[in-house]
Image 1 (cartoon, rainbow, N blue to C red):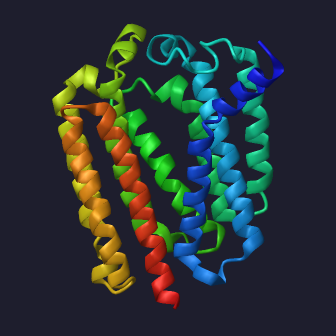
Image 2 (cartoon, rainbow, N blue to C red):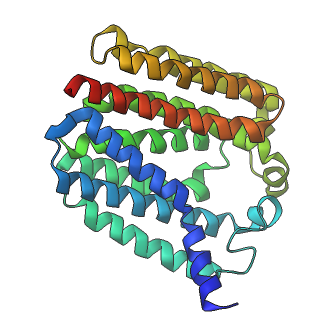
Length: 280
């Protein structure tokens, strides 16, 4: 395999779309919390830390999941032969170091969140992924915490609390849908995911209930006056898209989980525009 193909394999290990998206969500969290008062270098360090940590977590996840991916995702870098397992592990460590260096430039609360998240990323696949519901909840927290981390970086974690909660429950629901989608490979590997333990439809109903709680909470900033009508106009289609995606998951989990993710980004955009409207 050529060096260019190997380099591309390492890039794919990070799931660059996910890493960039997580970094953007951290930026949104910082902006929603502090607006134009956010210190640009501080926000930049938070964004870099999130991108590196997300890439590292994805790489180490592929390292631990290489046998499952040989069934579920044979085109991924390790099972396809583009990257060796050892190379993926070393690459992940290098990215974790980069994330740590960037995070150490931030306030204490942001550092504490980063430490917890880095530990959770390492432990997720090896210890928590196969526990019914626990791995789903952990991934939900990690996704939601990108907003919380952004808020903490600028000294106002509470300012991103609602966005953190919505992202957490929406991601929890999406992870359940993904487990339904990956049922065959997970069963072959002997994992005890939620759909395997309690059944597909019961799992999806649990995810739906979780999502509906988040959707209900998302209207709070419009009701309490934190954001105005611009936010309300944006959050309604976001919520509608996520609810529709969860309903669609009962028939086609692949489509459902993709549109759940898109709905989360529409919701993040609503918070962003809501903050812009308050500023102007």
